[in-house]
Length: 121
Image (cartoon, rainbow, N blue to C red; front, top):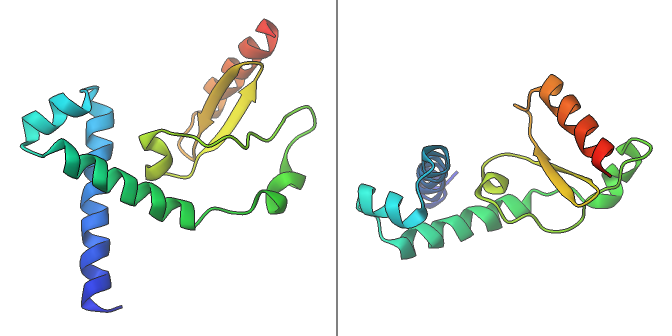
């Protein structure tokens, strides 16, 4: 890997951590940027860079459609959340509700949430 690629990856990693930190803090983007001395423009620039980088590694829908359980629909709408940039997400839609699941989701909690949502439909 070239020095330029290494530098770019370091910056992406640093901003990924900042976005995670902001998301976990519960602060708005304005509040977080003000507290950290970061410009909002820089924050949104790097958020869009990370989003674009994550989209490059997406798997085509056709390759996973056979893995969707019976009775579940594959959600193909774009997800616009900072979490989409940070970790791979499986969006699950039940009725008008949407649940975003990643590899750290508690399975027991997900099961309970899905049962409640199915009961509301």
